[in-house]
Length: 105
Image (cartoon, rainbow, N blue to C red; front, side):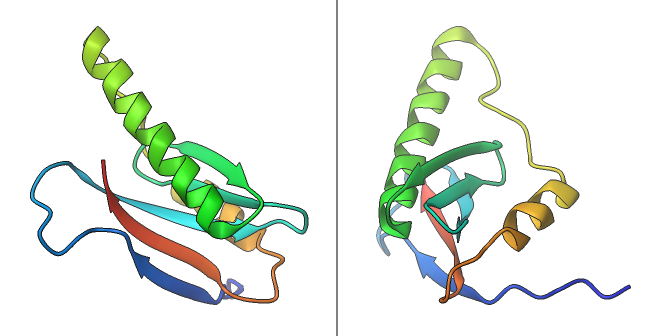
């Protein structure tokens, strides 16, 4: 059975001169009432009224998770399973594309 395709817009939130931090990726979808953003590498999510708000909240949440984990000698999260990522992406109900980004934290 063929998997439905999700239209995706790519955005890069990494400054060209950035050298510090770890590169993470995220996907933002509109579920019909709000935007949700998910960091695939850590299984951390955030929501907002716009894609930009959800992505900004996600970057903050990832940064806080990394700081918290480092202070306690723990891992900050674990990767999202492929099936769960596909389900998340297919939940997109917006008229425009879902959005994927790369960011440093």
